[in-house]
Amino acid sequence: MNRPKEIFMMTFPLILLLGVLSCLYLESCSAKKEIQLIDSEPYPIEIPKGFPDIKIPEGNELTKARVALGKKLFFDPILSVDSSLSCGSCHLQKNAFTDLRTTSIGVEGRVGPRNTPSLVNVAFNPYFFFEGGSPSLEAQSLGPIETFHEMDFNAALLTKRLAADEHYQKMAQEAYGMEMKLFVIVSALASFERTLISANSPYDRAINGDSSAMTPAQWRGKELFFSDHTNCASCHPAPLFTNFSIENIGLEKEYQDKGRYRVTLKNEDIGKFKTPGLRNIGLTAPYMHDGSLESLDMVIEHFNVGGLGHKNQHPLIRPLDLSDHQKKDLIAFLHALTDQDVLLKPEWAP
Ligand code: HEC
Ligand code: HEC
Image (cartoon, rainbow, N blue to C red; front, side, top):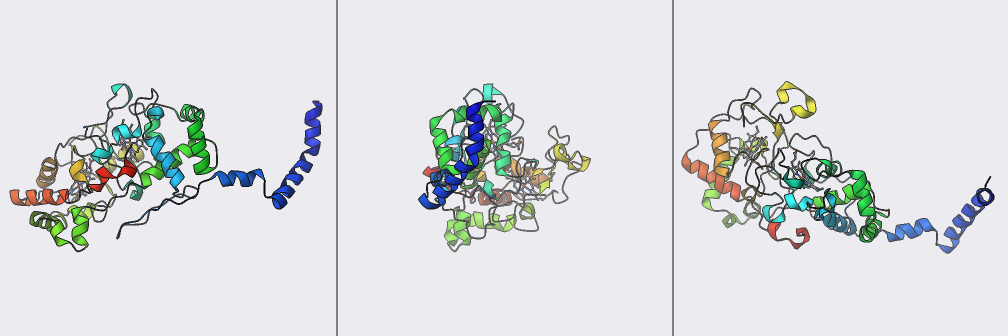
């Protein structure tokens, strides 16, 4: 047997005891040192009036260091296999964190099957992806990294790549008191995304007392939106303009992308997709899971005719018989949900 190792094994308990004692008396134990490396200054976050609380998993409380690391990762193309695409290449601040494409384009120009959703107010979502198949922002972020038509990379290789970078290692220590690993990557990305909160649209200012913040057409559109005539607000209630229910709105007669069915394999779930929030909707054309409706006019027309009549279609999707004026008012109201701050906040810029 190897002598030095044997000696070490025999003296190990003693070394440990000395360590604990020096910890107690000299306050210099390594565990303590590691904790001192963590920068735990909280990231101040304000939940807008009337919004629900956000759920943050234990161990990933929002701190400035975590958000800073998450932001750096979000805008770093190092996350994709060929270092060509970052999260921010598809989720662009100037488009309210969408890409204005029909469906997304990943590494090597690979066209994906779905339209890129906005990440604004994503902290309030109870589940993620159009079929609601991912339970948390932490779990979600591995999706784009590993998906063939998005970043097409691999968690283990990405961790290795980032661990080789001194700056990332330092930030990981500061943010989580540990070396760069997958937990750090997904937790930090989720932390940054949770800060993307928006509630300063003309609609918000109007309902908080400044009635001149919305035009007369927008006020009329608001009435219609919240009425039993359109029932828009049954699925898109304030303040987030979604109840997150997963519904079939008769967008297609035969769904290529079967939506919720992909998770449950139940026929009654074919063509069901998560109801999107409508804040900043004026900035995020084209619309729907497949980007098939190019404009808000087309969306309103879709609801006005009552969908294409799929067998799983929700009963509230039925002909509305809206006049041209009413359609215009509804669209005007949807534009009142745009918060220009989203496009300007330096904290959210690359
Ligand atoms: C190639 C473009 C592309 C890239 C790169 C990309 N995304 Fe996405 N993102 C999408 C598309 C498309 C969807 C919708 C996917 C679906 O529902 O199947 C999406 C969905 C999401 C969602 C779910 C939103 C919701 O409301 O359910 C989050 C969160 C998200 N992306 C965050 C990220 C993060 C974090 C990264 C980087 C690690 C990233 N995305 C990289 C295109 C992209
Ligand atoms: C039965 C629930 C339901 C009702 C009622 C409803 N919607 Fe929706 N809405 C949805 C779902 C689900 C989607 C996403 C469908 C998809 O991607 O295939 C959606 C998508 C949208 C979109 C596109 C969002 C995006 O980001 O692509 C807009 C805009 C919209 N609805 C506005 C309205 C308006 C205006 C009304 C009333 C005239 C209305 N909705 C009524 C459930 C509903």
